[in-house]
Structure formats: C-alpha cells, structure tokens
Image (cartoon, rainbow, N blue to C red; front, side, top):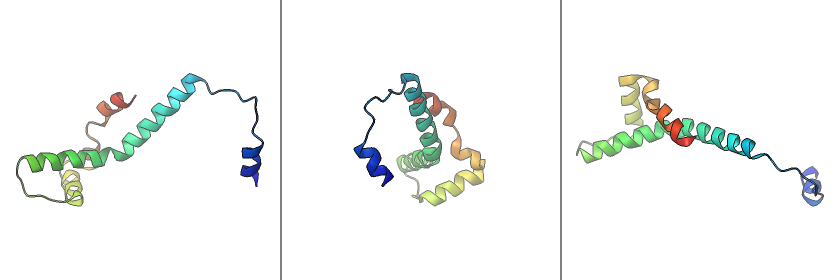
Length: 88
C-alpha cells in the first residue's frame, strides 16, 4: 500500500542527486562486485592457461583447491589491487 501510494503520488519537486555522489556510488558498487567475483576470474584465467598448454582439464573446485593449497586464500585475490585501479 505504501509503495503504491508513493508511485501514484510522486513528488514533483525532487532534488537531483549530485554528480559526485553518483560517481561515488558507482565506484563503490564496482569495487564490491569486483571483490566478490575476482576469485572466479582467477580460476578462469588458470583454466585458460591450462587449456592452452594442453594439460589435463580439471574443474573449478579442483582449481580453487589447488590455488588455496599453494598460496592460501590470498591466492584467490592475487592481483585484485590492480583491478581496483581499472574499476575506479
């Protein structure tokens, strides 16, 4: 009921969001999304290198286990700081 009221009785005099706030929100969303998805990107890159070298194919979970065993959980985020620069 509240949502319907707000949609039908919108305020005409609404103040626009400042540009710097929009930029900050976009950059923050990009950083959060990159942080969440980056481990999958690392695994994807390793799988591509493996396929190019003609090595035996292993799945995503096996690659995650390999990376964590070799470098710890930080290995899944190796190179993330460089990607932060690209996002922002």
